[in-house]
Image 1 (cartoon, rainbow, N blue to C red):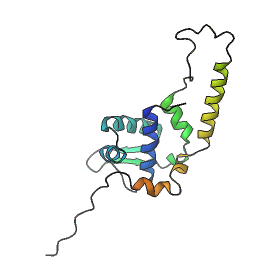
Image 2 (cartoon, rainbow, N blue to C red; image 1 turned 180 degrees about the horizontal axis):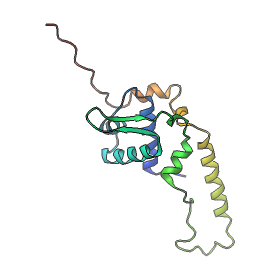
Image 3 (cartoon, one colour; image 1 turned 135 degrees about the vertical axis):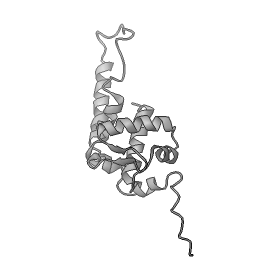
Image 4 (cartoon, helix red, strand yellow; image 1 turned 120 degrees about the vertical axis):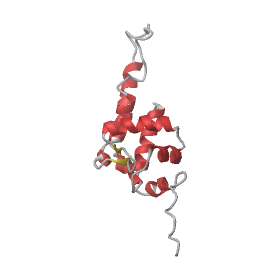
Length: 151
């Protein structure tokens, strides 16, 4: 099963937000992950509705990981972005093998197994160990504040 681009982006955005100590912006997420800003903005909105991210509007606003997001499973995020569709559609166009076909049942089992593995992994698990520090090295980082000039 191949994940759609939005799902892939959602998982990477959640991972980066989880290890970023301060709020970040959609622009910073897009730049650091080398993703189109417009897509990142849409995915961030969906992640916010899902309870993965918290968004704060305004000048000092930004995006941050939600407090309980680490307990959400990767499977839950994948389902939210992928939907409940089956791997194949036997109705459109109507498949002449549908009456006696065993493929659909096997594909359902495979999809269920795929999601079951993802249900065993929490978002927090994705950033444990060496992944967290590695994520912080992605893309350009915000410039440090200017040093005080001795006067």
